Image 1 (cartoon, rainbow, N blue to C red):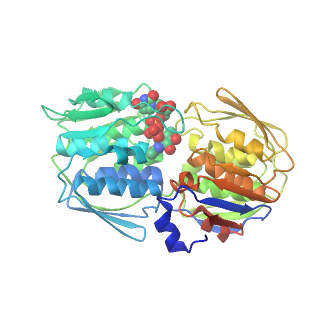
Image 2 (cartoon, rainbow, N blue to C red; image 1 turned 90 degrees about the vertical axis):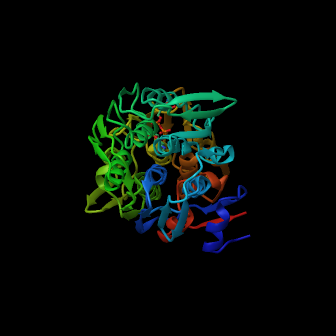
Image 3 (tube, protein in one colour; image 1 turned 45 degrees about the vertical axis):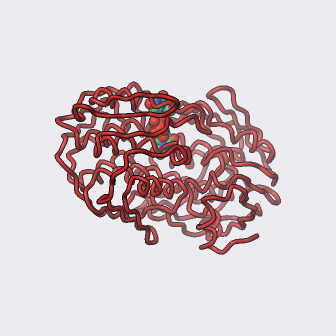
Length: 434
Ligand code: UD1
């Protein structure tokens, strides 16, 4: 059955059976606007818990993970209303401090609600987020940091029961690794804590700065975001504000990759080119012409693609792990041997087996992937392995000979607003079926 756009948005969340049918070989040309960043919208929605009254978030993407975050807010007693890409959250009715297991399971990153709920209500109960498709994702750094701030945390049968008998207090915290989620959770717990919190070896991702800008607009006192030392001076209360979520840098990279792999030409708008500083040079090394100006990036791929010898995923400002699979799709068609080293997640090469079904010559050995470019990819039935791995298969399908069916589209819907509508607007031929 084929769906109209509204039906598709409504149905996407529940439907695990949907597939994308991609007719390969269309050259992508044109202009695509990038929606708001999933990885910023999620902590911002959690942060709304900390503010009294109403908060309005613009540019809030219509993604299944964002819908899940809104369901968590409703479960806590907040009012969460969406109008287009604007979400209004009112915390007047905030009474609950527990996130049910089924909501925690929907989205692993809901752990970011822990710091916010604890900061506002002084207690929180949620289930331990288990492993995910990227391999084990422990939360030891989140827990250790919150304990240093005065949280008492019991874990029993997979449930985390957290209280703050003496209130949360500022602390000096040195993270063993600049974890994005742990940095966010500490910031959320610290804004209403007593005294000063200093995070050393903090994550420097642009989404961290977006969270700080939002919290500061609500009355928080946070300095140093974008550096590895963040200082948070606790305040008595936060008020609501109006804020626009930053653009999604990984969606931008995906659109650029779609033009690169099909030999097309694209202008991606509503982006912040500086957030793509480590990604754009990789497209240039492949032989693409790339220009950034204002809030746009232009890419033209009129020359044959070349391999890239060494890509290493690293915390920001290094090459983002979330763009690894996306770039890999393009490298499958680049002349020569490319090497990607994945240093952030253990299990992030699962797309390779599926790419090989399409005729790619790629293999993974531990943290290293070796990709020998091929002349032709062939359409096949493949399954999205995770969000970005799924986007990688869509990209490969765009360049493949014949039809590609990508199954488990639900995983792709976690991070892309109707990926098929966006790419079709630039000349792709993709249908959602199921
Ligand atoms: C966030 C992003 C995700 C991105 C990742 C790395 C969101 C919603 N998700 O995930 O898209 O791929 O950053 O840029 O923003 N770790 C521990 N213990 C901890 C916390 C993390 O060992 O307590 C490890 C993780 O297993 C992983 C590494 O640290 O190997 C990086 O994780 P982290 O930066 O925390 O990523 P997330 O916040 O989960």
